[in-house]
Length: 96
Image (cartoon, rainbow, N blue to C red):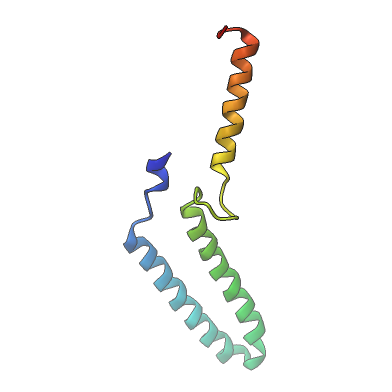
């Protein structure tokens, strides 16, 4: 499990993704304002915010086992599994 948690995405992949996402959003906003005028700014900002949110969620999913409130509670899961295994062993009678 530590191997998975300690393996980040390659740096060049992250840089490439962020660079082209920001470039795309910048050019998309320029084109939208040119085509539809200043009234298109709220819709463009909402769509840009949504796409940047997806990228932020991908960053959070890259390290799912940290000790933050929005990460997986791996320690609690391990305690529950250990208790269940101990109960099963006692029930089956493998340990006296």
